[in-house]
Image 1 (cartoon, rainbow, N blue to C red):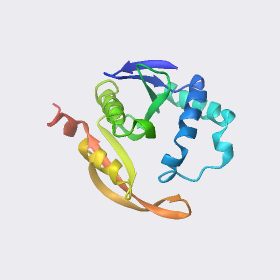
Image 2: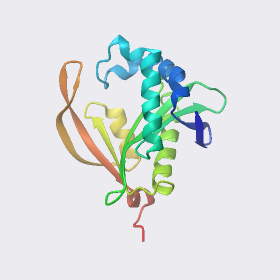
Image 3: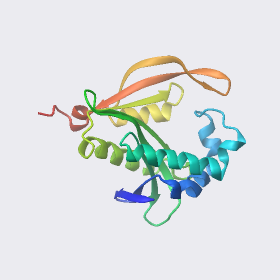
Image 4: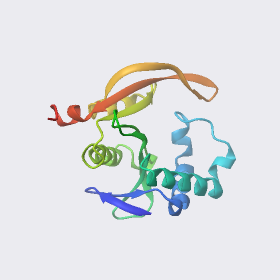
Length: 188
């Protein structure tokens, strides 16, 4: 894995084929925790071959500058503690991307996820020069909605019956953060 940057407590790595084993372990360990707001996954999802394929695909999208797939480990360890990604990176007229994130259950409510997400937001706006980040969060996922709000994301609407989770069509909030909002003013 390519180490892209570091924060006070974390190293950020770009996902590639070499991340498959660790990412699979992260997903297996947090399977129950993530299941509430994730699509139903069959057993073939949790295989080494599938994660090698997914990591290879993410690495290819990174090379095409269409995705920033990152995993974070603590500086004192090698296990993945959080995953943050920017997908659908678009330049041209919009300079935008979609933000997604998760934190291992063991590390939740310790500032690890916040540190990782804030670092990626900073990277998106300063290094990638994006103008807008979007997040899509389940309307029942109150902790994630509150977290996004604390980062100054603004709700722009609700997508009704957006995803099928556990046999039920769920509503999702559409939120956005503009570079100017993060900086507290307008760029000139």
